[in-house]
Length: 278
Image 1 (cartoon, helix red, strand yellow):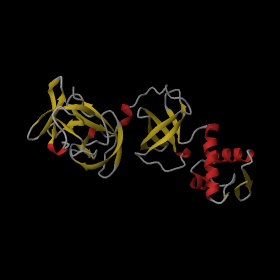
Image 2 (image 1 turned 30 degrees about the vertical axis):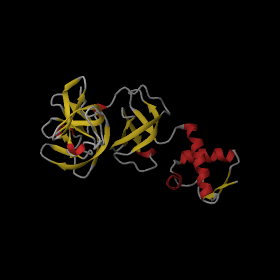
Image 3 (image 1 turned 90 degrees about the vertical axis):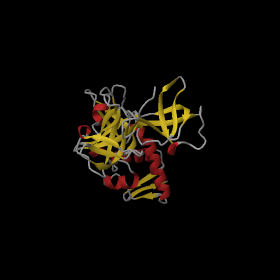
Image 4 (image 1 turned 135 degrees about the vertical axis):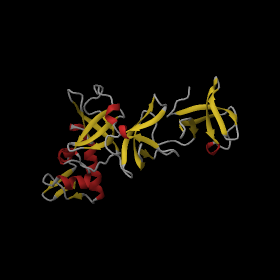
């Protein structure tokens, strides 16, 4: 059976004037056209080929060798290229733009802006549809997550409290503004760590590992910075958090833990005007 919205491995069943018809050799009735413009020069009948299947302007399944920027049941950031009376259209790497109907927009979309969306198959119409109401496609049970777990994050919404993120393409999480030491924009993918899983299954995340686990890599980063700056950095316990982040991309709390470790290991000396390699 053809899987719309995903990569399918199919067989070239027959060649026609408009392209190759592809399908499964055990069910040639369920076939799909690969138009001539996408046909590789060396494709022959009975060859296997990987294609992405979506629907054309008349809602008929069609195959392409192009790879879209998002697959069915996935999240991805995409730009709006047009807005019409039926919704917003996104560039997802194929000739036919991807529709986000008004009912699937968490807020009115604007041309030129980027949004994180979820791609799903509308079972009633057989069409691929994108939605920026991503929270309803996330798993509400985050009990599998454990504090300090490394995770993949995708920022999808900026709020007064912080940045809402998708964790491992499955759960919802929050990065608090007062714990961010770098700029984060909608659509940014980044590594992070689970900070805590609350009783209500809400998840707080951080871009830095919690507690002692973060000291060793941070200490190494400070040593590398010292070596690059001829053995001295004009930073110490009294430096403002902004200066520490600008120089090392870490919080002041992490910096103080790291230089404390380096000082105890007799790797640095702490002066009134900064830190220096021993």
